[in-house]
Length: 136
Image (cartoon, rainbow, N blue to C red; front, top):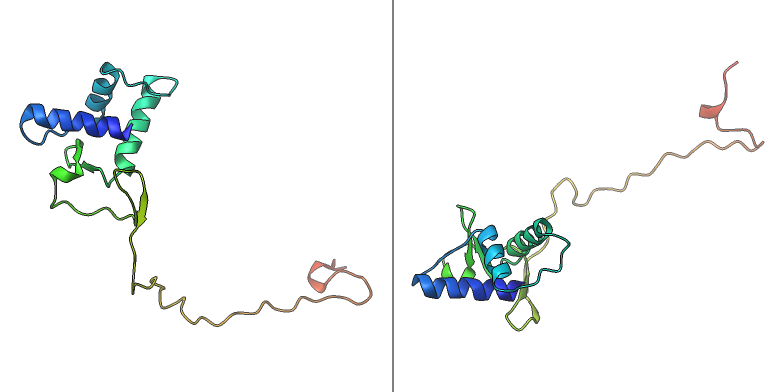
């Protein structure tokens, strides 16, 4: 679905002569008209899965403030995605390295002494502990 969406946006760009972002519904209608078969039980589920793919595939698609999506290559000044796994066009995963970066730990969690649980009373005669005994 990602490849078909990318190709549709590229064709849309060529026909418009510049960047031409589209709303998810426009992309869905164009893919369906072009013969793409969505493997879902109905169109509503297909649109939801298309939106989910657009939102999660930030390496290829860029969401704009007006709710439309375009190709990331059209917007070189846009913020970089936050995830660390990058999927390139061939489908291989290449990991980005976080060299020299340590995970942040709040000061109240650093070197916190381990608190021991209080010893529970146990009776040697088989009776329940004091807190469970009935008062008479």
